[in-house]
Image: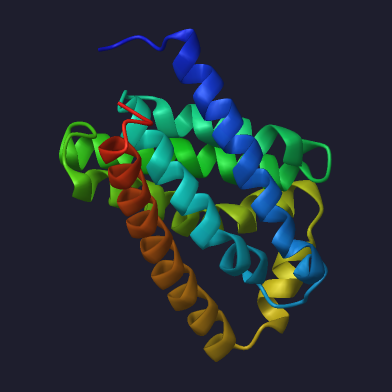
Length: 179
């Protein structure tokens, strides 16, 4: 197993900061009563930057570190968002490593980056209940068709964001900006 170098950590931290800035797009829907709407808004951006990070670093643990870095600034707003990002990253990475044995295939990168955001939805319910109890009410108040539509949207936007991130990282490699 390859060890992380300082340049890997710095790259992931900078990328996480940029992803967190794009995560600010969810601010207008933060108080929405629709369960999962925040993830729907942010999923393409987080998946995009996660894919770029994985393509650059390509080491086991990359997504977990990225999830930790994106979650840390969110800890000050809500512990639930921190745990969602970090736990989602760890679980998505475990699934990807078990299925693909690493990040060598492009499909493994798309799977990991997309699965990360997709997994934050079911993770958010127990963590939200544990910290503040509000998600159960949101979940109960959101009509089933809305919940299904939001979840399908998260899947589509996460996969799309990860695929675009893969394309961007390929172009950055061609340009010699990342190895």
